[in-house]
Length: 244
Image 1 (cartoon, rainbow, N blue to C red):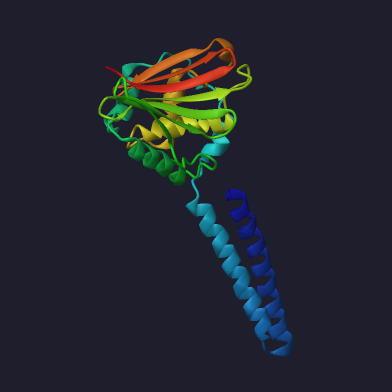
Image 2 (cartoon, rainbow, N blue to C red; image 1 turned 90 degrees about the vertical axis):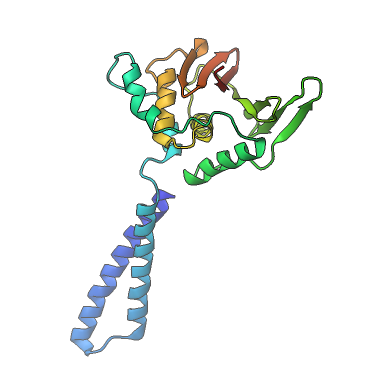
């Protein structure tokens, strides 16, 4: 989308400049301006303005593009300390999983809409009740490789959520799976930005250079929530669990 607005701005600006020059030359030669030249010049100006507005309105760090290139590691190889997390912890409202499935779906879709994460919206969760334990589970299938599974507690509030992706686990995690992970982090932390979600993923170690993903098991804890990513056979799993 960013590229489309950029093209509109460039083409509109060039055409506007050309028509302005032609209008000046026409005035010098005929001492008048044809109405069609004025209309075309105005149309080009509008197109250039739309392109500029779109370029300014869209976020500069597109989540989709960043999700496909996260094999880079912070150049500093020092261990992460508690002080490193302090600013992020202080500005975050640790709401945990105190939400119903409907609230969970709305928050997830809200993050998708805010950051324009195409292909990740949840339409309807597939609910599965468990009368024996007075709890339940829910599931949503994004595509044939990616699905979301969650469990509820006795109060019918979300207790934990998991993302499963099947495929070649030797390949670096990226694309829609990494974007879905970030969206899930945003869903369970009301005041996180997309960059905050990326920091959590970084703390897990998933973005480290030369990470052996076929034998990976990384975890970090933030504000009473445990974030874990691991691989097993041909399945990659990301889960968020409320720490007891």
